[in-house]
Image (cartoon, rainbow, N blue to C red; front, side):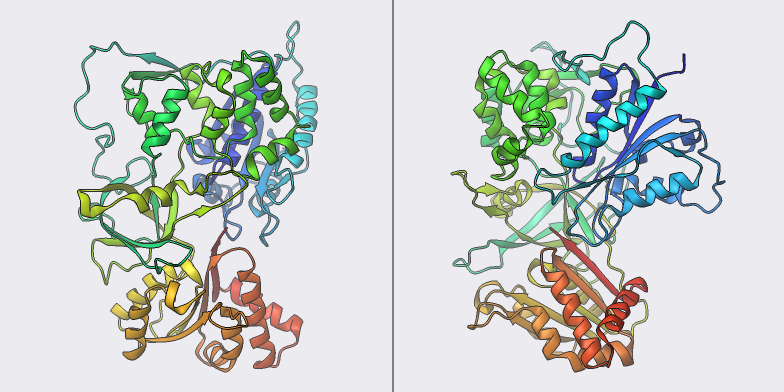
Length: 594
């Protein structure tokens, strides 16, 4: 009997790919496979040549980049010296998660599939291309693909004689068992929040507790959007440079209290976790022992929109027939339209969903909490300041996320709401953070001019770049900035105007609502096409774009193409190709977010 072992490897940025990988892991266990589910960068890639059966689940981020937790794997896989037949004994399948509104849709999954094939792997199925833009989300592709995959796998590895597939009604064991400590057991010394870490460079596993220095609103009080300029002191952290700061947020006290009441949990109870299966590592970010209060405040993402897997597991605990029927419907393939309108469309949170199923909620065994609710993910912010200009300081420009859906309570972003609520004037405020490199690379040659296009908070990385370049005495800085109204949301106005006066900055502004006709950055680019063309053609300028990924990037690309046509005399197809060539040579770079 061939060993029935399956390895599921995932590359995940927001948690969706991890959720899908864990779903495949559960389905494998029901089909009696020994199954491991691991992040690509936690897996020792040198072992890949010994694997027989692997499913890869990977997301594509930004401009066709692999997620952070598969970057090392990616570099290894594309090494030139890997022999062509290295993976000849591997049966594999690749499931991609992407968004078809981005040009490089599912680029990572397609490239991974092709590379493993080049190295001799045997694909069980064509690559699956899950799409966020589909009405039912990526499940519209994943569901049928998985059915086909299990058909294929069970043909190669039939069930052992006498064993059936474990029915969905049977609850699988939790990943960890939770052991409460006696009330009078000795308390560990020190604060739970700051696990003692060697003085390493701050990272996700060892964030630095940075002191918040200031938290200032930079939009008018009458403006609909609250945008903050927040400064952190990172003295003693070892952080010397970075483009993006990662911040680990926490749940608000009211939500934590409600959650504990709903589940009848004592926030002060202390517990330790033990893995159910040997070889499973404990959650790295949880101290041992830990309190329920700490678990719910810092780890469980009770404000995220619950995924289908949440309802599937919840249905196993339900003792109430009506609630169980609804939960089963939400977790079935047929119920996805219904789930979408209950959860995704109105952005209902996990905590709100638990309110709607009170009989089931109070029956949740605490050890299943870590299977049921994902961990709180860190949030990324472009750093909006230069350490050359502000040593030991990091600033961010942050819009506080708040919007209405059909639910009566406004929806709030977890991280921005938490950060906005902190007031450094009322005592010491500490925020766990670390930094990483961003996608924008500025020219090494001091004489190369840069054209920066940053509407709204998209201006943040350019504020950092301009501060840095001014500190180095570089003058060729041209900024296109756009917002709604000069009087309401013209961020850092005084700073830009001072740099213009000193000759360090050429500034073009588009205030979309200050006149009858809406004016955006793309219009200003077209109006100033002679200057843009001169900088591009005679002075080898680099162009940078940052901001919201909806319509803006396409509109800016169109404006740049029209500059190439009208000033450079190119045909539409030549202009399109020239812009693509600028992108390939990294003279046109963009960083956009949705």
